[in-house]
Amino acid sequence: MVDYIMGINGIGKTRILAEAAVCTAMSSKGNVVYVDSSDKLALELPSSIRLINTQDYEILGASSLYGFLIGLCVSDYDLTDVFIDSTLDIISNSNTNINDLMEIVSKLSETTGVNFHFSVCDEYERELLCYIV
Image 1 (cartoon, one colour):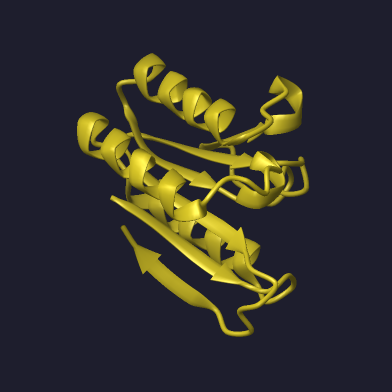
Image 2 (spheres, one colour; image 1 turned 180 degrees about the horizontal axis):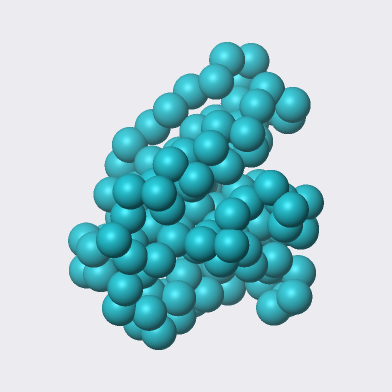
C-alpha cells in the first residue's frame, strides 16, 4: 500500500506522519523506518523507529529515492512500513511528476509487502488531502 498526505507548508503534515509512524511502530510486528530530509524529529521519534536523514546519503532526485527505497526493502525482510517526509525536498526535481513516483513505489510495495507513507508539500492545496495509491 502507498498513501500520501498533501497540503501547503505548515498545515501539519509532518506531525500527522510522525504520529502515524509511532502508532504503526507500536502495533507492527516488524521494523518501521522514517525517512526525512533532516534530523528534526530525532528526539521525538521513539528508538523503535529508525530515522534516516537523506542528506547523509546524498539522495537527490526521484530515481535516487526510489533506489534507496529498494535498498531498504531488500536489506530488511522484517520491514513493514516506511514513512517519507518532505518528499519534494528530497527529490528536489521539478521535472518529476509525483503521481509517477507513487505509481512505481506502489509496484515496489506490491512486490515487497512494505507499506509506504509520504508527505508532499503542495503550495496550491490549502486543505490537507489524503490519497491511497
